[in-house]
Image (cartoon, rainbow, N blue to C red; front, side):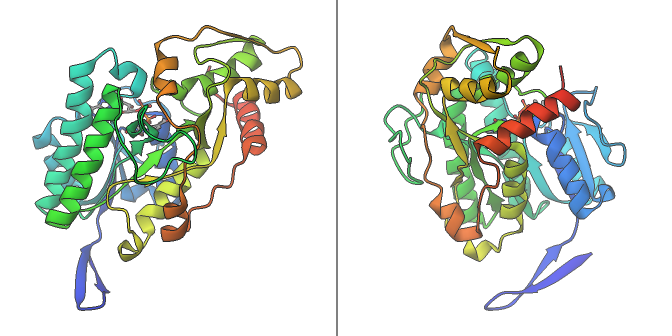
Length: 331
Ligand code: NAD
């Protein structure tokens, strides 16, 4: 089936196919699948991951096993399931990537190029690919970091995300590939464990407070990082995918912001709920990564172009995390 849309000049035909989420068993994938199934119907969503044991599986959604680097199988799945939209979440995150340089580069880069090429060849109509605050480096401004600024990341992950952004813009300008992207900050959630990033401490601290009353933080007390609650991150993702392309002035990846805090501030908030909670600090290599990233982000382009507005402030995020972990969170 095709949808006929009119722009200023002519009619354009959009193929109405299913949505494929690649990396569907990860921290974001598990929750994105739920939202997309709610919005479009579970039979319109295909979930793909390299893991054969699929955690957090939605029984109404069809799951397939896929290595994103296997372009042949990827194309087969796209054809077989009439896919028109891809959410590419499979990647190696910042902390793990530092220990697997070549693999991280291959996965983060070739995975994206495989999808961009298939869109260029018209097998896919629209792509979502997340970038990260890791594109910024020690020479980027730390406060209210602008959309366009010096990008000299010094991590494998950051270098791959920065290069990915350049490829996204290139494929859009050169081949008209409709790829949309957000520079996610650290994402806070409780339904699925984080995948080995630098901001994972801000999730671990809640589990530790609830289960042990104690947390030893690998990020030092004064290092402020930008974060967003999962529900907001998912809404940002679905909103940018629904936005009218002609309103999008950023063709690489949008800055996205919600809240910012450091370990000491979050620990103090947690102490208001669990007065016995204790925190100590043993910064490791991840602290160095965190020090190279911004503290606060200027996301005015996202707010202006497609109406981004976060809903979860720090207090609301903390309440959701504590209640969520107590009631159903992973252990
Ligand atoms: P995650 O590590 O939790 O999940 C990634 C998923 O990809 C896993 O289920 C993994 O099995 C799968 N995967 C790995 N290699 C694969 C392959 N070769 N083929 C298919 N699937 C494969 O990651 P996440 O936190 O859900 O992040 C998703 C995306 O969002 C990534 O691109 C990440 O860089 C980006 N991002 C995440 C955060 C965050 O805080 N979680 C912040 C910024 C950006």
